[in-house]
Picture (cartoon, rainbow, N blue to C red):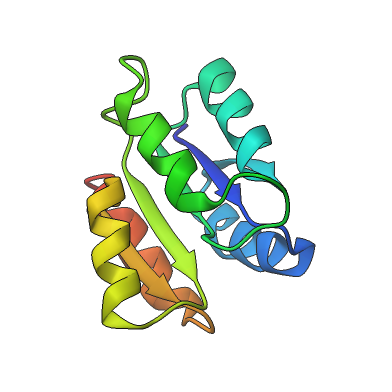
Length: 122
């Protein structure tokens, strides 16, 4: 069973994504901050990370993605940005950080599921 880490400070977003992905029998991990995401990623080695950009605290999703992509144990884990920031500049920053995909909130759960399956090769 593939593991997917959902990182978002809003519980309702995490729950929507979890419900969307659970129907395909993915194991879901959740983090409500970038710092917790790094901790969980290092411990659990997810197959995919869905990362919000804007989160409270000292670190945002872009910084967390950069750190993950520099970590030898997590650098090959795909990261999809899942964010309300939809300007071209934001997409460019996501790519620079190492993101493998970019979804703008609100998003279609079905489109997200298709992207997850595409990235995981299913």
